[in-house]
Length: 301
Image (cartoon, rainbow, N blue to C red; front, side, top):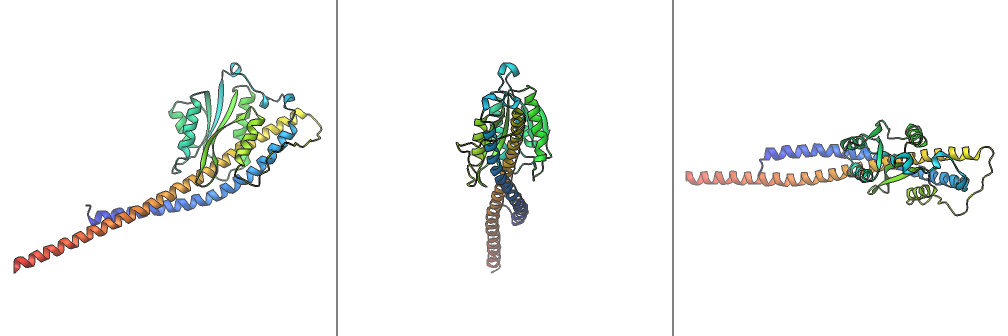
């Protein structure tokens, strides 16, 4: 059994660790509250924007905008572009590992170039010698649409130039503080079916979101309909990426909060065990000292 001094040193060390993990848990909880609020607010907008796009673009057969154009593998040599959303820091449970694992499974079946958001995904892709076109590490916690615009424009431009036949986004859906679901979604070419599934999945836990009904609103508009639908498609694509970043941010903060909470609880249990061990060691020392004193008195007598 370790000496009492060694046990006291370990107890002090674990207590210091518990203070750190508890502070990180509280910080993550505060960030998670803001992130979840932004995510839920954006889900409602996603429902309305989808309804608008479907209503305007219901005559989909007549749309010839590049973002709606599905290319064959022969035209692009079967290459796809993937936006991978991870975190810059660790200590967030399985958040990064889950989405990276899902991404690696996708890469095995496609010729994929990667654009990474977050250092963890960038390091993972370079470790497996995956081609990384660009990396973004400075995305703030309070994400705005202006932070997403350069990334979305890069994806849209690469697809519009005909360099890729599909564009995917690997992100993590926020379900609850305890549950986060890694997901990979196709954002280009714009598919009405894909968009509908995405918005409905994002809003499946939001009771106030309006699902798209079978009755679509007829809009009267002037000007070039193709240009209007194209601009709407670009805005909706940017909105999707924005929503995915919000979902990932909320998932990261909730995963970090739970990881730090579990670490704090584990530290508390370890302190209890070490305290019991310390008491046993101290009692053993007292018993030994009493025995030595008793033996000394017997020998004197």
